[in-house]
Amino acid sequence: MYEKSIKFRLEKKFFNKASYLDNLNIYSWLEIARKHFLISVGIDIDSLENYGFYYADAETRVSIKENIRYSPKEVRVYVGLLKHSGVKSTFTYEICIDDVIIITAKSTHNVLRADSDRAVRIDRYLPKWDQILKDVVNNEIAN
Image 1: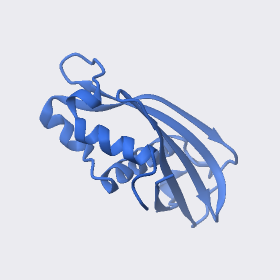
Image 2 (image 1 turned 90 degrees about the vertical axis):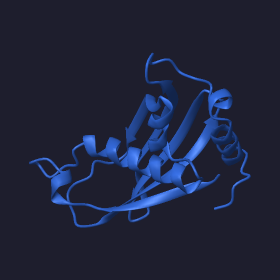
Image 3 (image 1 turned 90 degrees about the horizontal axis):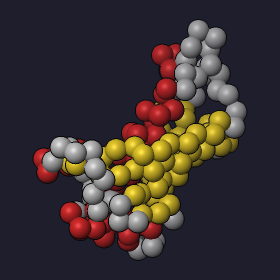
Image 4 (image 1 turned 135 degrees about the vertical axis):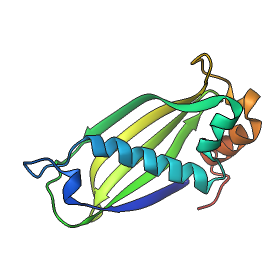
């Protein structure tokens, strides 16, 4: 599977007063990793606004394997595209510290119309993007 990863340095601002990771940061990391992944395959999500669309989260599931306490280490987020149907795309994530998986996640996304909040068929309205996503799922894009 084609995947990308990004690194973050754990900073005190990511943690609560008890020195445990504030879970809101997990969602931000997933979003940044997904955007990095899409850019790496030639898809600029930010440009959707120019066409009257936006990229929306339909569902995000996070499984915390181990709570994270503050330490000045790096966290690596791995992201890959699991499936793409022409309407929905599903991504998988692994968040690791010192090569140990501490969080896994899965998220599903749609492209919606800005004026109606209705999901659109990417294969119909954004055929180049649809083909790129299908190529990624079919392992036709190299790392």
